[in-house]
Length: 91
Image (cartoon, rainbow, N blue to C red; front, side):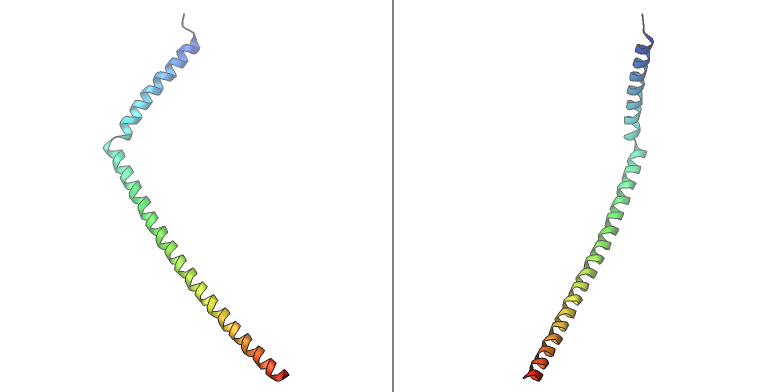
């Protein structure tokens, strides 16, 4: 005869098929499509915001690098002047 575990497994299998079929219907509905579209639009807006922020950070980093190079050049020029003055006083 029918074993209780076989009936249980068969019931779970049939339930899975029904749930899967209903899930496909729900996921392919017009309302679901609207949700997907709105989520995709939100992701695109977020991407745009992140890209703007990344561009700003990159521009700031370039400015900082340029200023740092200028500071080092000025410092090196002062050291050359000090070394020349020191050599003149020693001579």
